Every structure is written in C-alpha cells, then in structure tokens.
Amino acid sequence: MQGLMMDFPLTITSIMEHAERVHGAQEIVSVTRDNPRHRYTYADAFGRVRQLANAMNAWGMASSDRIATLAWNDYRHFETYYASACSGYVCHTINPRLFPEQIVYIINHAEDQFVFLDPDFWPLIEQVAPQCPGVKGWVVMTTAEHMPETTLANVHCYEDVIANQPDSFDWPAIDENEACALCYTSGTTGNPKGVLYSHRSTVLHTYATMMPDSMNISSADVVLPIVPMFHVNAWGNPYACPVAGAKMVMPGNKMGDGPTLAALINEEGVTMSAGVPTVWLNLLAHLRSTGERVDTLQRVVVGGSACPLSVMEEFDTYGVDTRHAWGMTEMSPLGTSNSSGARRHQYDAETFANMRTNVGQPIFGVEVKITDDDNKELPWDGVAFGALKVRGPWICSSYFKLDGSSAHEDGDWFETGDVASIDSRGNVSITDRTKDVIKSGGEWISSIEVENCATGHPMVAEAAVIGRIHPKWGERPLLIVVKNGEGDVSPSELKAFLDGKIAKWWIPDDVQYIEEMPHTATGKIQKMKLREMFNDYQFPA
Ligand code: ADP
Image: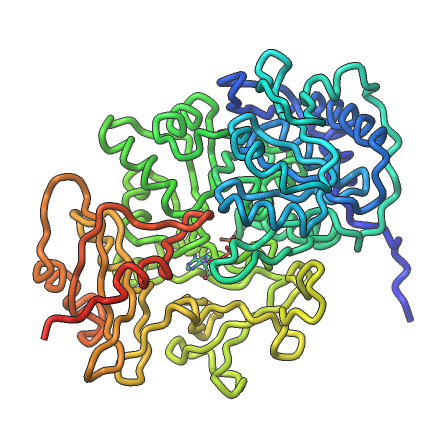
C-alpha cells in the first residue's frame, strides 16, 4: 500500500518562495567592490531575482542551459544563483583561483551560455574569453560607472541588464530531479570533473545542514559564509539561511582579511560562520594582535581540510565553539559533523581534546563504511583504517558528461579517496587522502595527525608531512614547516615537542623550513607540489 501524501517537488523555487513570504524582512549584508556595506532584505533580493529572470528569459536559452558565475560571496551572486536555478537553468559556479587553462576547459566543457563575473576577475576574463567561443555574453556584476573599458564583444553591465525589467515572473514548474547547480572539483590531477546537483539533492542537503548537530542554523542566527559560493555552494549556506530566515553577511573579496571579518562579526552581530582552516588563521592573528574580541560569535564550522586542535583551542578563548566537519564537492558537501563541543562539560579536558579532532558522526542521510584493499568492510573499532566510502541522496552518482566515469567503484558506494577509521559510535577520523598516505615499513602513518600536533607548536604557522623514500623503511615522514614570525625552532626541538603526542615511529625523521606553503585553489596544502619541491630530498644518513 502506498502512502497517501502529496508528491510535492523539492525545488530551489520553493526555498525562494518560502523565504520571501515568511522572512522577507530579514537582511542580507554584503561587501562588494562598489559598496563596502550593501544591505537590503530577502524581499528586495527576490524582487531583483525576478528582474534578472526576465532578462535571462529574453536571452532565449533552453531548459538546463548553464549560466556560469566567477564571483565572490555577495548579493548579486546570490541573485544569480536563484534566478538561474529557479528559471530551470543550471548555475555553474567557477573557482576563480583555478589556472586560466582550467577555467577555459570547464567553461567549454560545461558549455556555459553566459558568464557572470565580479569586476575583480575582468583581467582573467579578457585573457580566457577568446578561447571560449560558445559564451554568448559576459555580465559584469557591477554598476555602469564601474564597468571596465573593453573591446571584447557581448559584455553587459549587471545593473543595466536588470534595470527596467518587471519584478514579476512566472516561475516554471520544475521536476525535483532536474539539475540546478554545477561545481567542478579542483582536479589536482587531470582535468576538473563536474558535479551536477539536483533541486532535490540540494533541498535535502539544506535540511541536513540546518540540523542542530550539523550547522544548527535558525532564524536567530546571523551567518557569515566565508567559504566561497564558488566552493560547493558555500556549503549550502545560501539555501539554509533563506529557509531558516537567518540574516546573511557576505564578505565579498575580503574573506581572507582578518580586520574586515572582525568588523563584520562585531558590527553585524554574526553568530555563526563557516570556512576552511586557513581563513581562521587570518582572523585569529588579527584578534591576537589587536586584543579585539568577537563576543556575538557562538560557533564556527571548519572543514575542507583538517582543523588543527590549536585553532579550536584558540577559538575557545573567545567563547567560540569549533565544529569540525568533513565532506567534499561530490557530497554537496556535508558528510560528517563533530558537535562534541555542545557536550564538553561531560568530559575532562584531555578526553575532550581527543574527541574534537575527529570529523564527527555522519549526518543523517549519509551512510559511511570503510573497506580494506579487497573491498572487505572493516569494523567500527576506532583502530582499523581503510578506504572511506559513502552513499546517500546528496552524493554524486556520476560526473557531468563523463559517461563511464567511475564515481562508483564498489557497487553503489562512492569512493571518497580518503582513508579513515570509524569508532563504535560512528565518529570518523580522516587519516589521509589515499594518494598522500605514508607507508613506513608497510605500516600507515597518518600525516594529518602529525600535522595537527606540529601546528600546536607556537613557532609553527603551517605544517605538512609528506613521505620520502627511505633506504630501510621504504618511506619515512618529512615534516615541512612555515615558521610563525621571526622566532626560531630547530628540528630537534620540534621532534621533542611531538614526542609523547603521537606514536614514536610516526615522528618525522627530519624537518625542512619553507617561506610559504603551496595551496590549492580551495585553500588546501598542495602535497603534490611539496613532493615535487622535495623530490631530490634525502634523509640524513
Ligand atoms: P571541498 O571542495 O569541499 O573542499 P573537495 O572535493 O575539494 O571538497 O575536497 C574534499 C576532500 O577534502 C576530502 O575528501 C578530504 O580529503 C578533505 N577534507 C575535507 N574536510 C576535511 C576535514 N575536516 N579533515 C580532513 N580532510 C578533509
């Protein structure tokens, strides 16, 4: 017997209509190049979304055509998200930090019809446009007086595009399984691969991100998404905030700027923020040097790469709870979340410190398992580690226009490329990326755990561990450090610091110092680059 409930589609349009009707008066504040503090309401935003939808409609595109964005987190980007998805097009967010050749590749691969761009990326677009013959128009997200001078054809000004358009629009009915957004993975090897989200997957993921043990987003929140909207849809914040009626504060191109972030938090009353570990280093450095505080901020969600314990403990001193989360582009992105901070009073300091570095439990909707080299499932005992696999309604089933691409190597499970252990309560500890694993004498060493401990030394700004060839052990760990400020710390001091914190045989054999850590387009340490830099390195005899 079937249930007798309405078969009602889960769409981005329904998020928009709910937000406008119920939370129309809530604010969206943005930093843009033409206005350091733009503010308006959800009602204003969705009025302009309808104007933009009318303009797009006149461009004569077909359903599911791709509209690209190369933009920071701000209100015009938000409007483009909604106008394209709710019109039945696909909003393809491009990471501007990719190499120009990769941007050309993904614009052409996605067959983008129009590209919306922040004026900051104008020089980049002038460089790539001649190689993207399929693009029918370039829309610069600014006002007429801030438009760049150009000889390039088909360049439009965003504000002119929407000016004089009616602010009513007849939204099309959309099947919930239709695509709404497209995001390419960074592609550290080979070409980037497109992950194509559906309306349904996005709405389900939105519910999941709002749950108390995940990002816990409510109408009482003021949310500062530092994670870019070009990086897996800012982890879903641009959908969750309108659903909850949370005020949004968008940092524009100032997301890496400690003083701006502190000012936005304090002046706008930010309660929750989300970003990769590196952005917090800038904010914390600013707070440390000025003595400023961030009293309204209750919690930060940190993911994208492992969050060092030292970052969490520094946030503690400001009364900010750090929520460590794990996910990936192929997972929309949220997979697990560590909400142990809410239960910290139940534990002694050491137990709590151990609990918080793992990435937490799978959020409902995401199933996880670990397997060995023969695809045999491993126990959840907190000890065994193996390939981490996931499945669920917001996890990619195959890549865009890559038929036969193996998103699934093990039945209907998606292979994350991470190595992990899982304890009896489902807490996941990410040990490594499969390709970064260090094998010493046949045994795995967790580079993430060694890095996490090393970053706890006050003289270490950033640390990375890579495996290098060793005549006896096959591979041994080499610790690479960017020092904090002017002071000094010797290899033997660092090794002594690690002693007792990690297994003795995990302690790196040597330490090398570099001026700057190479990062990927999404702010992760580029281990491949480090391995190249230290290709000829040999451990001291
Ligand atoms: P995103 O774009 O969301 O960063 P990517 O697909 O680029 O996702 O990268 C996902 C990978 O980042 C994961 O497979 C994992 O290796 C790493 N990662 C994400 N979050 C964490 C975390 N909290 N701890 C360790 N690694 C993480």
